[in-house]
Image (cartoon, rainbow, N blue to C red; front, side):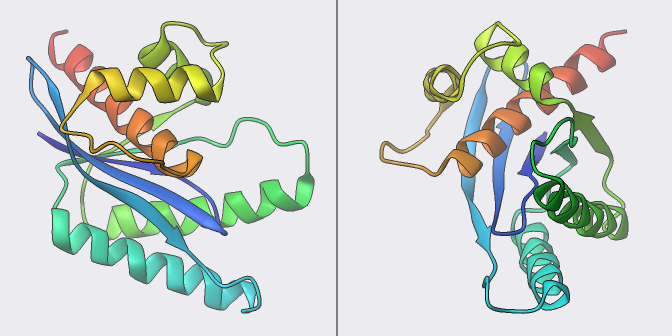
Length: 162
């Protein structure tokens, strides 16, 4: 099963495709969708949506995991992320692909074994869990998207066995 994980954002929207099987999870592709800060907010949202549609067209996921907005220190940032999530949910719905929404602490628990894990711990575990992940530096948004895909895969497998 091919799962697309998405870490919502407007400056950088992390995405990752993982091929999930009962035996292992293999990295397929990942990256960050970036929008231009100087553009209007509507143009940025449109650009993010179009780029995400291109990811769908290329990788054809069976499921999508998206992180829920749980807490934000900055209201302006929370609104921008919320608007980006709206575009993400629209794109996913337009593709008729089931969505699995996950909370940040679920991702940390699933990947690192603790809901209180920090980004470094999550990143280390992502590298250990995911087969075929090329070495090299990755932006936090991309690593988070991989972790979201892995969590969605685990939740999908758990729900299937019930």
